[in-house]
Image (cartoon, rainbow, N blue to C red; front, side, top):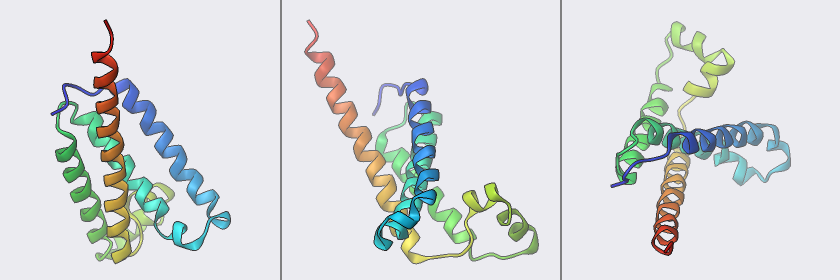
Length: 137
């Protein structure tokens, strides 16, 4: 279990992830189709991981990853539902970014890749931080 995440640091990481996600949409014409297919969704899932890591400050990486993946999957499943009120929300820029538009099985894979990447980066950074701290006299 993590002793405690630094909320300020994770908020900065969140800002970087959001910028990367927005950039991925603007750079889509310059990226290979295979990457474009999943990049935005993987970054979105990473963003969810970081957001939950901020809120669940003392929760283990594995639990944050599981909660993130379940959240992403739940949002994807809601894309099967098309009532006028929710489609009106999806028609807005922010609603479309959060709720998406249509269910795709490939998005579930992209979410898993994004969450796994964020969790692995967190675990590696924790391990590196422990080594650095233990080497300080």
